[in-house]
Length: 237
Image (cartoon, rainbow, N blue to C red; front, side):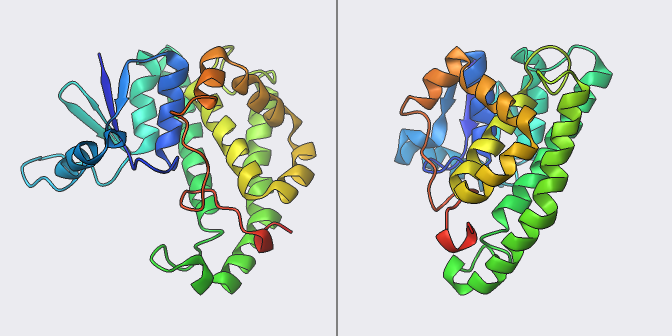
């Protein structure tokens, strides 16, 4: 099957978690909106359709045959068994999904460091609140979330988050570490010593042949000031 991924064409964002899974699996897929105006038009047609009984709320969403699946974690839950990136037994698959949902919660926390009041306001319009939110993020949220993932990884033997093989959760945690390094290079450098297993997992994922090839290709959209991860010097103290 050829999968169709629909997401904004100029940012990594939440769509990147899906891209990493598709790329690592060597799946046949097309990043529709990156095809130019026709791709964006195709995405907006689905989003604005009055005929679809089960329309997606927002990108990312995946089209697989006649099925349209929205929400990052659910897309990965769907793709996991099909791309050999999820365990076979139901209990382990649900556990993998639970971990991905927790990553989803963390992504919201990361985004809100630079837009704590509203996504409709520019960062410069909420800078004092962003500084306060970022301080809280690094004091409370990062230790709790990354500490949790470090503990789960340690209990599972230190190699992978679930079982003895890589799952989409490992790929997603690679993206979490990579993004935090971009947005908060100084803070992340200081914190990484507290989560050595997560750092090693990140490095292990980066060396996977298909992931490494993807990261070096033009298919990998660079980090920027328009995605989830945004670098502001005053927030990285």
